[in-house]
Image 1 (cartoon, rainbow, N blue to C red):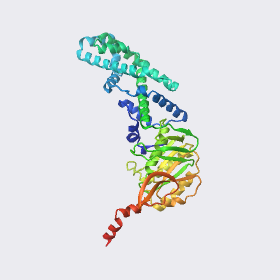
Image 2: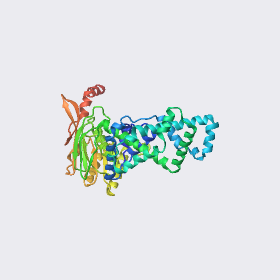
Image 3: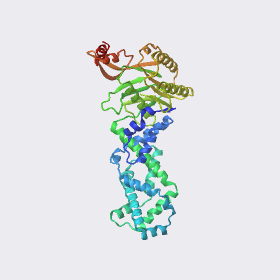
Image 4: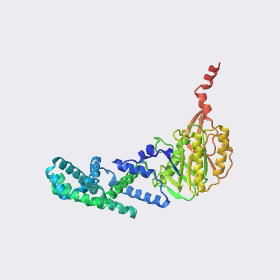
Length: 424
């Protein structure tokens, strides 16, 4: 079960971590962000890879190259026509086909200049010690591929305008050999992943995110916040219960808090650092995140039926033994109040019997305050009244809020008097 649409990974999460230079690495980053890892061991391995990049951040601070050079290098290294050329045919092209000769020399030059920059300024200076052993090998393989070319000599010839036809023939021959051995496709795959990791590590450093620890029970987050808010209010949150009931008045920040905690748990499961000062989270292998969900007209589901379907998927996953993390924002607000109260109680009581999953449910239904279950935690987003007017603190508190902001705002806008005048 992987229902993470409401996290808006492409629209909101990807921009947070995207410092890539080319669309290929961005696509690899996007794929990485959409794929939770399958075990704590895999998560910790990725954390250690990213920590290796962070310890090399001085080297990578100004990591850059010409995107045009990379596009030309990619096109040249993957040019299917080159494989059909013998050295005689290449010599012939260089001798008589002036237009093709100019194009080939240009692409070869851009390839060499790109690889020379990558090798000289970055890969030759990387401290491999902080990286896990397996990933050290991948970095070495990237460097080994680049080193197949006589970069120093060729780069000097290009700069001095002394690149000869024989040099172009040598470079093309190397390209054909590497492609025939399958090393070229592997090189691009490793380079794009390398740049995706580098992009993530730069963002972690920029936002001062921290890597979470994984625990067998409970959630503990300190300094939790939503990274897209310019002046985000930070919260501390801790629970050992598996069902968390969240309430509070309109505009108090319930949905924002749910999205922040969802980001922390989800990002932790793809091996990334999280927007919190400290984090302990449980490992989960199923996600169902429903925040600000509107009617799904394309699938033919009403808001209420979409919630019912998601809840059923969650329960089936739990019954199959999966460890799930789920968010239901304003659960069952698409049906009448009586039905909503009854089925919310049934849902809360039923889910309280689980011990391997965590379900957050927000609701405006005040009658849920009477739910009495030691396995259910109740929290609210605080709102204070200042001279009769609501003042939102956006701080989470344990317990239940009895403030009814709707009536206050209704009166503040003068609607009571206006409607009386209309009636009269």
